[in-house]
Structure formats: structure tokens, C-alpha cells
Image (cartoon, rainbow, N blue to C red; front, side, top):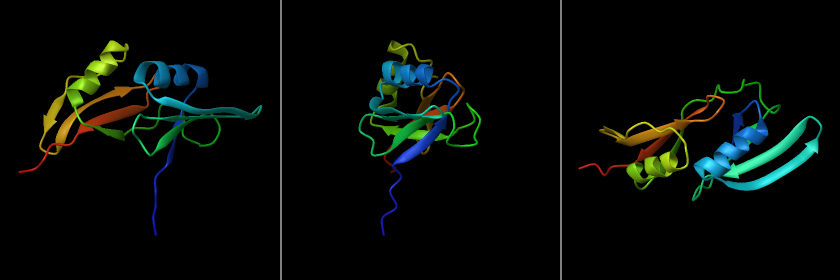
Length: 123
């Protein structure tokens, strides 16, 4: 039996601001933007190369905006990922070398945090 993680809810306070940040600055792909009702707008975005997407959420979860921490994406080159973010106006800390990988990250306008990991071969 396969259990595929394909969608993660990201709680935000302003969908338009969050969508602009993730698409225009971080570089996620906008898959869907559908107003289902006055209470529900479904905005799904996917990081390039990922099988898992995010949905920007105002009403589908009880998590308050900015409360999601620890999301992690994996890249081939943490330095290049950091430079990509900095060039697009996203603050990203210096790459940190740890025994289990090289890391940088970013925080969205609501305070949700992301880690960016470059996996380093063990040996």
C-alpha cells in the first residue's frame, strides 16, 4: 500500500499576498486558484520538481496563520537555492553545514517557516 504525501495545508492570513510570495518570489508553480464559495478559495501551489503541493489556507484548518513550522524541501545545491531566494527578495540565512546535510531556509509573510536541505553523502 502506498501512502503518498501530496498536499500540505499552509495557514495564511491573506491568500493574494501569500500566493504572490510563493509564486513570484520563491518560484512555486500555481496549479489551481478556484473560488469554491464565499468562505473557500482553493489555491494550490507546487515547488518545482516536487510531488507534494501546498494549499494556501484561510478556513480548512484550525491552525492560525504562521503556525506551520518545519516544512522541508530538498535541493541539489543549498548555496544555489539560497542565491535564488536572495535574488528574488526572500531573506535566507547563510547555509549551515551539519552532519546530516547543508541547510538554509525562509519564512513566509505570515511566519510559516521552511527548511531547505541539501543531502550530503555519508561516508
